[in-house]
Length: 210
Image (cartoon, rainbow, N blue to C red):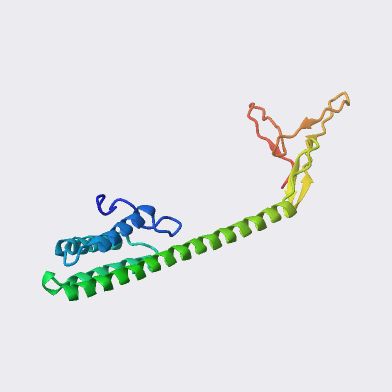
């Protein structure tokens, strides 16, 4: 426990798995249990303090994974129950029994943590499989229904689900000069006939109603 509690580290990553630094923390806590000598009151006081701090941090982080939160609370309960009435050196028989029970409880907790990790791993794989299947469906739709426009120098636009050629139309107004020569006047892009008043002001005439 030289590194203390990883207060600045997230307990659960974005995949719903417990982070490596917190796994190391719990393993070190288990090591203190395993190495604690019989009737060593100071060691168990230290363990209880660490467990209390771990629970407080877990609650502050508000882990989104309910199963993992329950495992942490179970660890806190095991430690608290074991330390609360722990015997002194004057009652070694009772102390040894409580130590054995604590070790058993920790082993059960370790198994529960391993099971939790396996469950998270399976859940992550199932999610990846679903995403892969969805991506495959999208790719199939893209290949079957979204076709590229023909490459032949023409201009195309979408009409329903098919490509249609866009034909550019330039309209003009037929005009005949006094000598009978025809001279068309091109309309503007919005189909208006350019017209100028006697004062030089331009006032176009709308020729096509859209």
